[in-house]
Length: 300
Length: 130
Image (cartoon, rainbow over all chains, first blue to last red; front, side, top):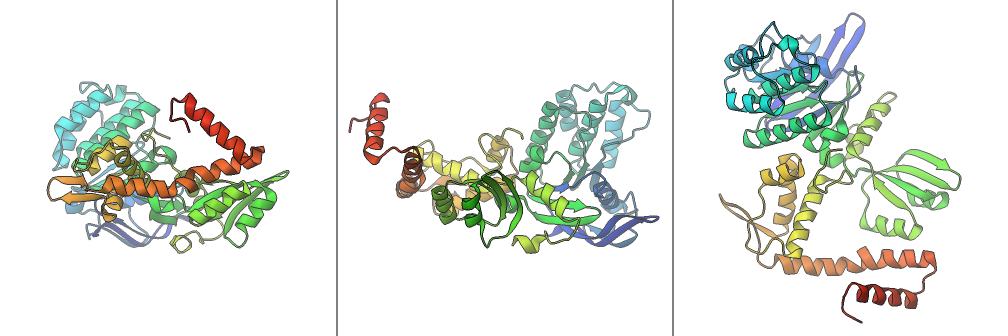
């Protein structure tokens, strides 16, 4: 697949602070990728550099094969929706008009139906919108732009669970009808996990994990039950974490579980629970602190 | 965790989509020769990535349970239901009987008692008397 985005050896320094440290990744065209990681990990910096709003200290960034910074050809095909998006002293309808001039694939019908879903009146001054309504406006512009590369940076400040579900549903529906490359940064991993084909985890400016979402699900399993049975079951297999409570133990075991394993677990009276994507991402972030052993090498 | 119409985070989503579709074919809800929901229909229903839904459909297509009619979509192949029922029958002992026996042993229920319990439940449900 042709990558829509390709980043090689990207480093971004602010004085003595390193925001991005030798980041390399590619994002395939027509995929939805989750950009995950803790606050301050470097997600926003990466997205801003992809959108040409900030410059790399070193390394190469290509969007559609060209550097995005000050490149009108690239920037017209790209939209970035930021968490703290600032607007001029506009009414909502003016912001939409401005967006319609910027983005060649702009869909005004989609924009007005989204605003209606979110209960935002076009005649309202942006200054007078609530935090959630401002996020709704950002989401509306991000989706209605139908830009070939669509970047969402934590786009839902102030939106409740119902409003976020509206975003996920509308994103999936419009993505299905008009495929594009979507990069969505979020810390609400459990909620958004099913949207992603791929996930990239950034931790302290480095890529801690870059894999397909479904490849990660079921790659680690919690084995719990009587201590002796757990130890005998997990003997000789890679293990991340072990906890005990009296005669009970719980161990996170890495690797696929076969039918034979299941049979054996059952006869030993053990419970097997696969780790969710969220749990895996948390672990990837925690582990990359000391080593970068949790990269694809470990997974495949 | 949003509601994914019955899917969960335990294991790859594409495999769960395939399992769901297979279940529906086995139950007769999707008849042979009938069109199966499209990738986008499945994605909207389960609230998952369309590529994930497509991968689920492809699992069944690779097994010959679905066939592609160019430009129209995927259809349940002839013989798919029989294949799936045979497979489920083969898995029945492992999936249902073994766990039942394990738990029965744990509780000190001997096989004769277990058979009596099964008979009892079966007649309560209006099932066939054995």
